[in-house]
Length: 364
Image (cartoon, rainbow, N blue to C red):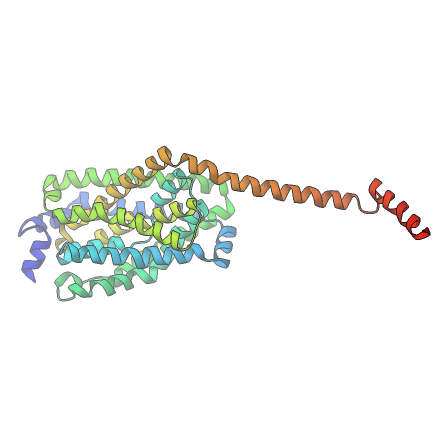
């Protein structure tokens, strides 16, 4: 077990150097505070994006909640587990990959769904629902899929209680954000923008600070197989999400939304759990995995958006036509109803002619 823990850290002294540098320095403590604050801002922005009226509609017809359940806590954890087995990861790398795969959806999916003209209500509801469901299902997924590495030190010390506590702490800023949306809609819109920018700024700062503390040695201690998973996992998640939406016979703009919601994970939450709940001397360089995942999920989602803008415009132009036709039909029906209402109690020229013809036929 000792040799396994050393190998997980990237070598006899590599893991200690990574873990010790991350755990003991004042800069590391500041980094922990930054991760916690970024997570709170992200969850606050998510709550500000939720409207109670839309939430009630989704609960009455819970397709979005069901898709979030299947995508985030069935497809993605299973995908992470299979990739960990396929690439024969050690216990530390496997736990980092499983943790990222079991995370709920992130705010990046909301921004990307907007750029591909997706269903924003569905996107927000899926993100919010997966975040709430994660309180119970994320520890369950970690417990189920880590059984393969149960005889290792890290998995035996897997802090499921601390994971649940971290998840529970995110519910308060979400509830506060929902309250702000209900009381101050304009302030909620501003906070949503702030949370999206904080996502980008936090990732940049984390890369810079981590590189400052540990330099290129940290990235050098991450196996090539972990880089491969960081590339393949979001890409496979996007594909699984699109297939899931097709299975539910959703329209194209909803398919794009579900695809992005499935592949985009809450990397702030994953980073916070790895940073705040695992012993740094055990987690070692795998602390960087969610940052790598964030890098590649953003790049691949950007390619998704670019491909849609270049090749999907014609199909997008056809989608609103159906809405305009429906609107026109309903408008015609409304006009007919108005005409019928205004003509109540009056006699038209045709009705007069028919009224005159009837007595003539009777006389005959």
